[in-house]
Structure formats: structure tokens, C-alpha cells
Length: 225
Image 1 (cartoon, rainbow, N blue to C red):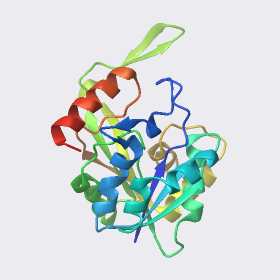
Image 2: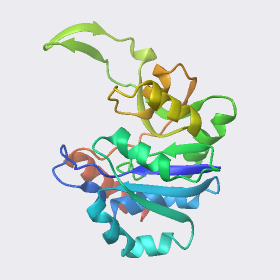
Image 3: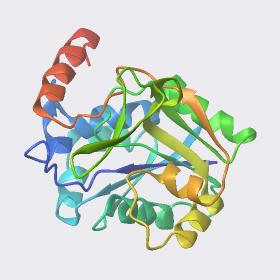
Image 4: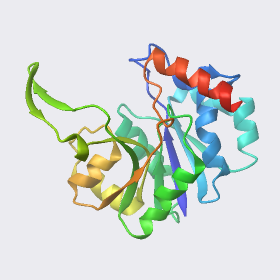
């Protein structure tokens, strides 16, 4: 049984505003993001983690009122960091659910089929994430100077969802309590768990900058979302 956790408590510092609440083709960005999780029969519940002041606004929205008729949705408050928000989501998930599927609220075009693939991969691995091969050469730098050039053929760009056994992810949290990471897969890797890479999708990009928003508007129009 799977709980989908959608962390959406970020302040949007790189974007310049809270893009998760910005309207895309007449609906808030978060509604586009939640839709494929609503449609997936493998998802038992959705936990939307947001800044506390937005909880009542979301509950009064037309999108939420429609979605909650189709699937159980919990809304809980976020933490200071992304990993704190995800942990808050895990803690309110159903005790009986043994898998958590974590997805960035700012990735509105994820396919239901890819969500399901990450879940199904947990039959053989401790977890699975979506990722795409790097098209650019990646450099490690220190003080503005290149220290290493990574082998591009072995470099992948992580996406979400990232799906794991809940008890194993909680162990990874406990093992690395003082480590600040940008995705949950890193915690699992640090604890020695086996994480499967599944080919993601170029359209499953994260809306981070204004140019991403312009691209999102084009895709939403094409898909008539």
C-alpha cells in the first residue's frame, strides 16, 4: 500500500514567488501535479505538505474539493527544510502503508505510468527513482576552479517521484540525522540501500526559473490540461 507525499512548502526563492500556487491554464500548479497520483490505482492516499497558512486555502479550492471525492488526501504543514517536510508527511501516513512515493510539487507533467514503474520496482529493490541521462558534461568545482570532470556516460539527472519502503527510509533518516540533502535517494544511498534508476521523461522537469514557467504554459496548452 502506497502513500504519495507531495512536498510543497517551499518559498520559491529561485522563482521569485510560490509557484506551486500560481495558475497554469486556469488551475494551480499543484493541481496539475496531484492529478496523475489521483488517477493511479497503486496510490492509496496523497499527503500534500504545505506552509501552514495555505492549508485552509487549499481545502476551499475547487480542485481540492474535486480531488478529495476521488482519493483520500491529507494536508499537513511543512518543515524548515524539504527533508523535514517529507518526514512530516511520512509521520501522518497510514501505519498500514509500507511504501512512500515522494514527488516534487513543481513537476506538473509526470506520467502515471512512470509513477507506477517506481512503485513496481520496489518488488526487487529497496527503492527506485526516475532520472534522465545527463546531456551536459558535469564538472566538480572548488572556489570557482574545476577539480574533476565526471564521466557523462555515468551521470544521470535525478527526478521524482522517488519511491522507497517506508521503514527503510525512516532508518536512513535516523542514520543521517545531521546531513542536509536535496533528495531522499541520497539518504538511502548513504545508508547502503539499493536504489533502482528508471528512465524518466524530459517533460517531467521541475519548474524552477521563469523560463521553466514559459515552457510549462506551452506544454499545458498543447495537452489541453
